[in-house]
Image (cartoon, rainbow, N blue to C red; front, top):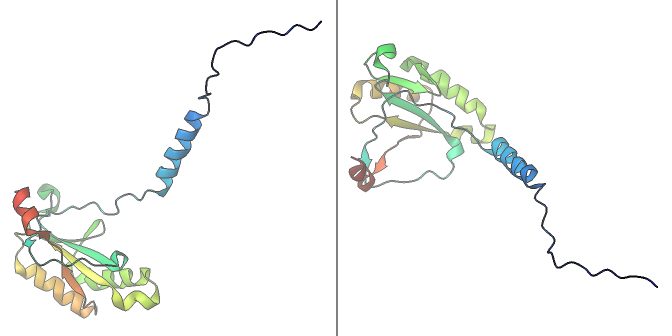
Length: 157
């Protein structure tokens, strides 16, 4: 005669052995797909406040030019400078920068490129006029000035 053993009442546990593998796969996925910041800003950035702001829809068509005093005056001096990508350039280098930015875009979108000027509040108009003249020479006629919303700027100060 066969003997039947009585099943124990202990609940089977869920195996967590694969949990570290799943976490590692998720971590690796986010490391591969996350885009790091492109540019480290080396000039002071206190943008002017504005009330009538308009957001640009296609941000892939925007190239940024930073103008302001260098954050490290010991290395780069105290005069306002022009920064594109991660380097300081003279204002005469702006047409070459515009051509490089246009070359990054598909040919159909090159005429739609925007140059966004992020200019510090205390920057003199002389260097800004030089930048605008160089942009005009490079036929980059779509220019906007980055600013912060007036209420946000007052709260931030």
